[in-house]
Image (cartoon, rainbow, N blue to C red):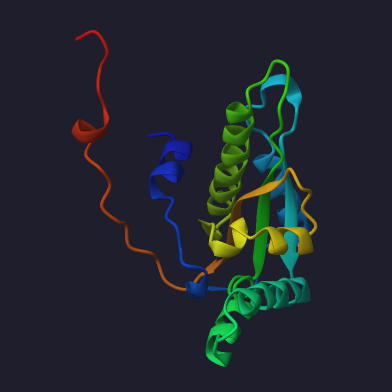
Length: 189
């Protein structure tokens, strides 16, 4: 079997809490983002972009998330706020894949959204190919307009996912995958 197929067959999501450093070096981050951007993009609209969180920027973003959580839940405990502050600091690198799908005379928004999803998946796969662990996550803060504004997203932008990237501490176990008989039909037969 070709190496690329073996790579795809072995990709697993790893919880950010189970990742460690060091994260990718600057040249590796550039390679990851270059690969992430090589996706189907009808009309060459580039309906996505990336926000990189590394070093202390992860903690700064965590403060934004914790503040939004406190605004939503005035009775939040200090333990809850500590948990929220750590959201983007569990892995050495987090990349937000931002969808900037918008109405277009020719290109359906749905295709633009799917392109952002493809960029996120390419990023996850590229991280695996470079020997890193990765996990594509959206949590409540990915849908909180105040958090998005504070992270610098435009009014028309949404988070397609936060991709956490680091080193795997131990080989992840595979989860059950659906049997093809349950997810595949053949038309006309």
